[in-house]
Length: 84
Image 1 (cartoon, helix red, strand yellow):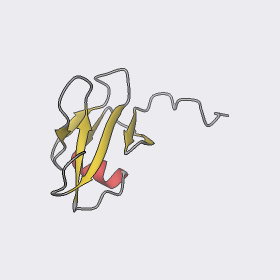
Image 2 (cartoon, one colour):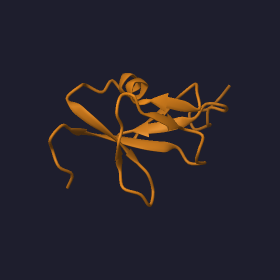
Image 3 (tube, helix red, strand yellow):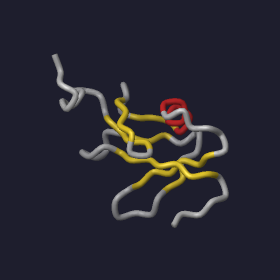
Image 4 (cartoon, helix red, strand yellow):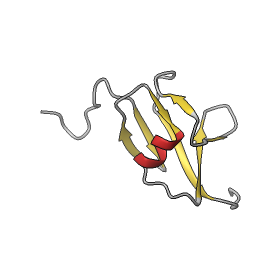
């Protein structure tokens, strides 16, 4: 039996607004990301990549979750608002 702190082997993990999710595939589309995080249409999704500018995730974007050893991180922001 797995403890709550044990990593779910074989499934990439990702974070949406600091909430952890496991995913069954090595890639995820923007549409699947929106469904997973129950993200409404009036909210933009951004991919936070260390050392690079944040990248907006479009519905047809495909992200390789296995490309890096650390979990991928995404955040949301209301359409038209500015960070900071």
